[in-house]
Length: 97
Image (tube, rainbow, N blue to C red; front, side):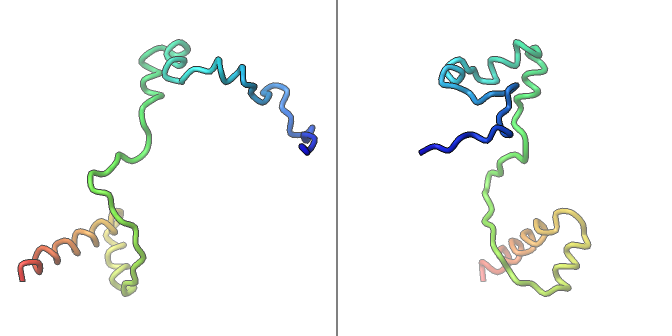
């Protein structure tokens, strides 16, 4: 049995969508150019966030000596990438051996 809706949560200015509302809905890529113009709409629809990396990295947990972590952190942003680079250089030097 469905409970009664909480009257305090009902928004008369923005009611819940019906099936008819969903059937009339159009993608933002169609609607925004009509409202804001093509140039502004294109800017609004640009993907956001960090670009996808070619080689995906694997998140791990690792225990390092505190002084090692502090030394890398002291070099500023990107310290984790620098640790990755140092490990890669080690592998390159020791792979042939």
